Each structure stands twice: as structure tokens, then as C-alpha cells.
Amino acid sequence: MILTPRFLLRALTPADATKRYSSWLDEEMASDFIAGSKRPHGVDDLRAYIEEKTGRDDVLFLGIFTRDTNEHIGNIKYEPIDREKSYAVMGILIGDAAWRGRGVAAEVIRTSGIWLCDHFGIKDIILGVSRKNRAAIKAYEKAGFIPETEGRLRTDLTENLAMVWRVDTDKTT
Image (spheres, rainbow, N blue to C red):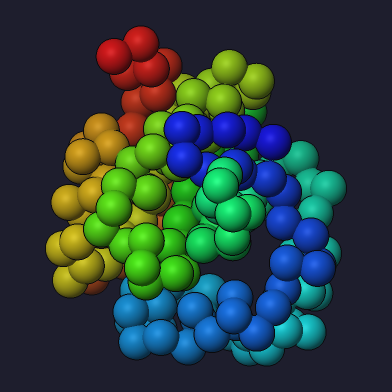
């Protein structure tokens, strides 16, 4: 469990796969910008997906829950986590539209990234984002991400932007 000022981050369990969670992946924003929304995502599919990720050393799949009401509002996933090369690839979904644009991503990314640095020696958090998703790019820049130029992320760079946050050099600021 990881705590931020407003959120509790904890490993997802199959019980967290709900119709509400599934509905997030049906939204236009998700279908346009979240790679995982392209595969089947009914409740049973989500349960199987969560079970597949559970217990793996190279995956940290966390639900984002409000601290005051324990409401599930999104997820953050690090996969793969490469301890040998000290980096992790991140994806985040703020599923509850009421929480978008309220600084959730920056707060959750910063706290979980520092946790990964402290517990696993992860120095860089890498992500890919659609160049069309200006709101996400702005949020990632606010969280400290810059363009990634080392080619560690396999993505179509004509459509997507690879970004990196150097956690170990930024975590004290």
C-alpha cells in the first residue's frame, strides 16, 4: 500500500473488476488513448487480466482509491519493471471523469515513482503517450517527464511520444 495526500494505492484484486471499472474502458478517451482498451474488457476479462498480473516481479498494478471514501477512481501500472536496468514502463488511467484535471496523475505518479526508486532502485519511469493527447502530455510534463531519447520504449514515434521521468535525480525536489 502506498499513500499520497489524497489517495491510497494498492494492488488490484479480481474483486476490483467491476462494471464501473469496465465502463471506463468503453469511453471515447480510453478507446482513443489507452492501448489496453482495445482488448476485451468485460468484468470477467478484467478479473483474468488482474490475475495474470498478480504476483509477477516485473509488474506493479495498483488501483487508485480515494482516502476519504475508498472509491476506486483509476489505475496505475508499471510493466515491465526492469530492476537490472533501473527503469519501469508506466501507464495510468484516471477512469472516474470527475477526477480528471484535478492533479491526480501528478500526485500518484510522483509518490509511486519515489516508492519504486526507494524499494527497487528504479531510476527512470518511462511512458508512451499519443501525440494527440495534449492533456496527458501536459500532465506528464507537470509531473516532471521529458522526451525519452534512449529508445527503451517500443512504440510508433510518429503517433506517440516517449517520455521519461528521472526519479532518482528529481525525488528530493
